[in-house]
Amino acid sequence: MSVLNVGDKAPLFALENQRGEKVRLSGFKGKSVVVYFYPKADTPGCTTQSCALRDAGDDFAGLDAVVIGISPDAPSRLLKFDDKYSLGFELLADVDHAVAEAWGVWGEKSMYGKKYMGIIRSAFVVDPKGKLSGVFYKVSPKDTVGNVTKALESGH
Image (cartoon, rainbow, N blue to C red; front, side, top):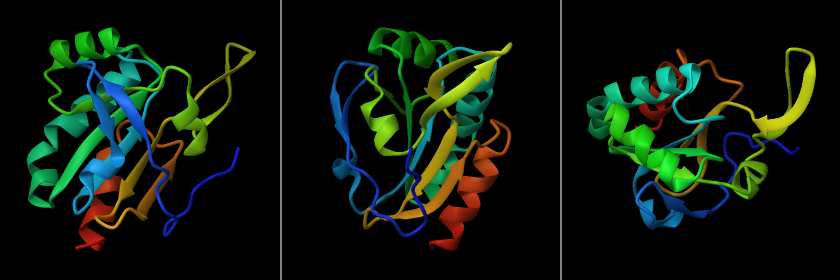
């Protein structure tokens, strides 16, 4: 698994959102984009992380930034997650985890002694030119907003 670093060009993607529409990273050129990867919609850590990002929406808007969440969930599950918590931002379905692999967030995990492959919770800030200005692998759900806000503010 290759990891990304600050200054790298953000890997492009085109994925289906919770409403079945194709969303491309290139469609946000000129804006800062917070891209976060989470293992599974409507689980405790993912809900904490997503709701914290939702609650920081006004702050992000003030920094001319949008939020995109990516998980291996199907669009229908993402829609239920969005509806349940009124997240209000793009949730993208990376069901074959190809985008997660390109961003270096698909790797070996372990739970109750069993090893398996899955999403390593991570967050990134993509600057208006498409380069990474913030890279946070293995980020805690509670630390995501603080980390990406600092990266956004230092880019302004």
